[in-house]
Length: 129
Length: 118
Image 1: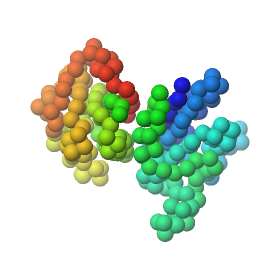
Image 2 (image 1 turned 180 degrees about the horizontal axis):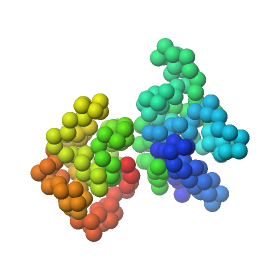
Image 3 (image 1 turned 90 degrees about the vertical axis):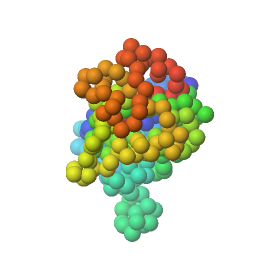
């Protein structure tokens, strides 16, 4: 089965993002496909490259980057949600006359059309948070 | 084409939540999909008449609901009990809504391909 996933909660607001991460791993292990993970609202906080939790805590952002690297999963961060919260990739920062480069490896920034496309393509769409 | 039901349960002006859900609703409608909205629990306050959000520095999201018909979003559903529990009548809302009893909500949801929690 083909899944599309949306993550709306930040890592420290709730465990919804981590639940999504565990669900995706379980789905892949069972032979399902994950078409896209869309980070929206406070979910975009998962994509901050410079988040530096203490060593004995979960490394949320690094886990997502590793998941994308291992399974070629499309991790998309909503551009308007990201800009509201100060997450800019270097291209976008330049366009806005700012200096910034926050986006972690394996994520890309795009628009809400990518979310609608994912819900159209997938057999099942699940919102976390 | 898929049939989408957006289920809104949060009160208006809960941060940017409502505005960001409306952005998804408008984008989905712009993709020519069939879009309906179900207001449950505190979500029924979204359409309450006489909000003055500008006093709190918030956007007038009720005005965006009123613009939905331009995008062919005409089916707005709500739950009889959610209104009653909050002392609201359909006449207190800024749009006309179709009311369903709580026992019939599951049946309503079955009519859609995507039930979008918001």
